[in-house]
Length: 128
Image (cartoon, rainbow, N blue to C red):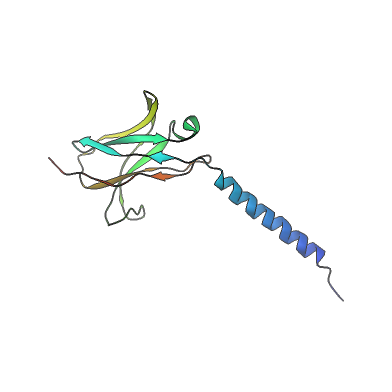
């Protein structure tokens, strides 16, 4: 007895449509940029920006990491603090305040359902 391939083909079409639809949703997340600077004294701050600022920069969670190796790696780097952005003038700023820590640091803007995650450059600070 020969099986009819139509149900198998239909199942494959439905599965591939769902897979592509899931990828398309991820691709539509808005781009995000996060910066970092240190004005001194172990303080770290920066800005989050996006083409969709009210969706992706406003109230965005930012994590501060101390880089332990030659490259950024959140699985081994030490989380030193976090903040949620707030409007300062016309930009959304994060600020961890005085950490008392020095070394190589970077910021990470956490992914949201509508916005891509973002890493800042790594900066190096020295104790006074």
